[in-house]
Image 1 (cartoon, rainbow, N blue to C red):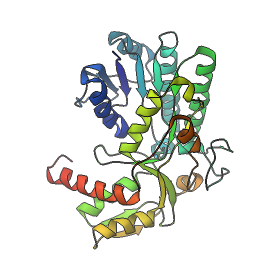
Image 2: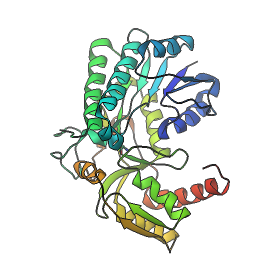
Image 3: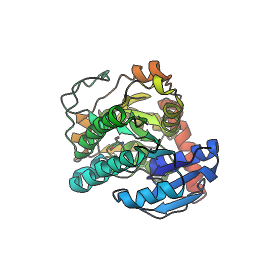
Length: 316
Ligand code: SER
């Protein structure tokens, strides 16, 4: 039986991964790790540990005889620009700690990269797997350096590490924090609560996006794929759809007619402008069979229904 460690388990993706993986292998085989204490369901144990402290992480891995790590602990792009030193430390030292601890222990790793590996010089449309990257945020730099580190540990030390470049992730259970794509989640909360949202990027801003359900399934599926199907050991381009902030607002208005969206772009606009508008993920589709399920209309109806339930029952 497998024993899975999820780092960053309190976060937007980590919290939902624990639920999905707990359903697959049983909660008694899932251990959570986060800087902040919490007792999410679907876990046998939660360890409050700083990912930059290799010794503490080693103890957790040995205590629970972990053989698989979903390494989700990370600072995101917008918060990263406010604290570049901490972003380097958490994102790079954290990843290197996990890779080092996996060496010689036969531990399999999932680690998320991001569309933030692309930069202002990358093609914006149909952005290929291999192209100019040149990220210009600290977050993007740590993701690109992290991809190369993964490739290095795979080549030199045979660490079975697998990765996808996530687009913006839309979800209702755990709110994201510190990302540039967070507007695509906040807009739903404000549409329900106040019928008005002031968006921190302009109406024309178009970015690749994905619903959480698809994002979690992608992580599980790339980990379940036969190892020789995973041909890219930096990170796979991955997407579901692309839309502008205005298209998202219009789709919400189809469901909540009185909804108004205003625009007040801040420093996050420049970050968004540096990323692709739409990416080519054909390698993921061809190599290990990636397929998305949710589009803009189905995300919108699902988000509004689930968030309404959550806000009604006071779980937010
Ligand atoms: N969602 C992330 C961010 O906005 C991108 O990977 O920072």
